[in-house]
Length: 299
Ligand SMILES: Cc1cc2nc3c(=O)[nH]c(=O)nc-3n(C[C@H](O)[C@H](O)[C@H](O)COP(=O)(O)O)c2cc1C
Image 1 (cartoon, rainbow, N blue to C red):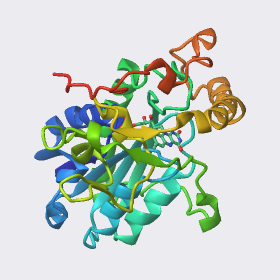
Image 2: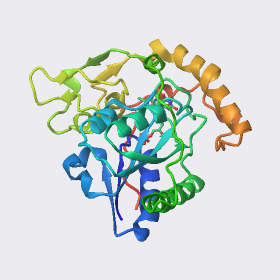
Image 3: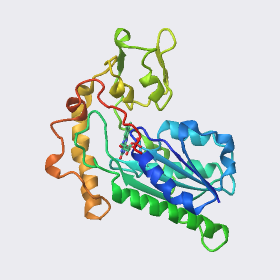
Image 4: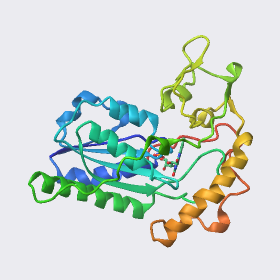
């Protein structure tokens, strides 16, 4: 069996899970590649029998991951599985991504999610799910990878059937509550071409500083990563304007959902309730530029 694990990961939670799955799958199969989504040649995907796809939850499926799947050739008779990390609520992610993959002829044989640390500027820091994925999550990811290889083999030999999958949701289920705050670009502070961090790390490829005037193209998904990683403060976003919204959603929606998940044994908090940073939203805690330093890959 030839496998590939493809992932999109902005802050490396999903990447850690992808590595764990890869580590477990590689010894079991003839070949197992691990690739960042941006670097995948979609025309070569039909060389694989089993495709694992990982992504964070951004309301549902991030737009770049949707576009990636839509750009795939038809992959009849291939098996796929999906994994995600998120800060509370994956409900809209799996129905959508399963539907997209099935539209490409793929047989989806499994889905699995884990909690991940959250770095959204207007949410409390520490956040409820910080510390995930931890060693226990990574061990579960390895088990999941092995399970997917075994299931794929059994389905191919007729010994097993694909499991029931989340049903598609109606289009109105996908409205996004994520705030869309205007960005102001301070050209004088920008050090392009010496620095091109925002351009290279924009997951939507929506920034081009090589043009005059420098442009923030259509397609921005308001993740604010460009503002967070800019070392100069050349991109300005008024997070104060959405602070109240962030804190009230964290209290009324995210905290409640996580308390329910904890009571049902689906969430293992690693941050004590009294340590949640209600008074220190991420952007206030990290009030110098860059607000977020892209971590070096762990060995
Ligand atoms: C732009 C953006 C939107 C997000 N939307 C959601 C969401 O709707 N639901 C959720 O549970 N988590 C959401 N998160 C949190 C991420 O899913 C979570 O931090 C995830 O583990 C990040 O994975 P990564 O480190 O691989 O990028 C969002 C994060 C970002 C940056």
